[in-house]
Image (tube, rainbow, N blue to C red; front, side, top):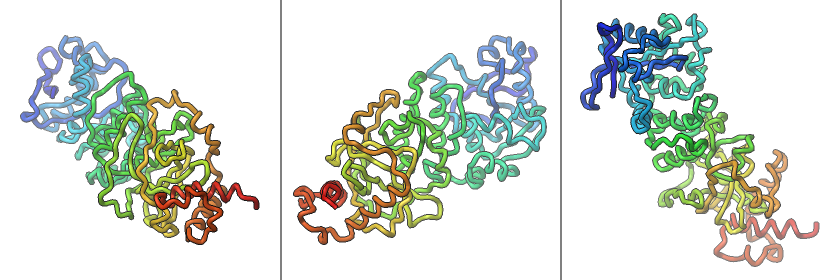
Length: 437
């Protein structure tokens, strides 16, 4: 780790020293937004840093740190060699830890002239500053003149209202207490200069390490979620919604944090007995996992019940719409991505929503989406509220007592003992809807 020595040298520059991980001295760290003419590592080493307008920010940060008793400070612009892809990757994977381990983090809001309006700063709209807000235990906010506005502790109510991050998280509560979807929602409206950084800036929020591949575009966010699924068992990662056509790719995973904008209130909740369930597997065919599944219609439509709900609604669970692309209960795609359903689970018996081990496709690029699999089944678009309510009501009635349904309304397949209720729905509804009224 490189650190700036906060005392200016004889040539009015600042020395940069390297430290091993087991020998890092106390240091202050800067959180800021990049402006024109930021000072790089090469500028500092070449003695030409003073020529850039960004040098004053370095001077002021070091001055504040030195006045507070810190001999060292870390600033991303000049403490990372961004000409080295290997070093940049290591730094980004270490960033959350560096901010967490700093004695103090100085937040410099260059565009704010009065502390009373600090939440209007551009700093609150950028992707990288999310982890920089959460990680440091000790933070001090400064305006554009380096006048102190307050600390994270003293400002936490305003910070929470501005960012959507609960105050207890800002004050140091374990991030694991927030669901994956909730954590994603904090980044939903934030932007980064490079598309891939919308994913890379979240690595520390989820405790993930992965290589950087600039040029992979939206695939970076898919890859981040795949890594999250390997270490966090939380269905809320599937509870995203989006009206963006690019998200209608049939996959379980979103292509942008923006799809989690409405997930700030989601909490993990699993009322089912899941002991012994097979682990989630990601393959070339898609994501293989077990869902409590409710079949809805002849087009292979159904609901996958997620182990998450809205805060304060523990009798309900979130469900997403899936379509059985081959009517075999083997391969599915997500449809109606613009909405989820909140199901009252007091109306469901366990037999009505059996656990099914299924595979949901995950196309790597939404731009390559094919609509053929949707078209050949004749599947409708997303149900209107009244249509969905009627269809779900019919499903509940059909499954109250399967034995009461006349045998001539059941196809031979529906009478097979090896089919569960979710599969019978398809066959029963095919026959009942085809019968004359």
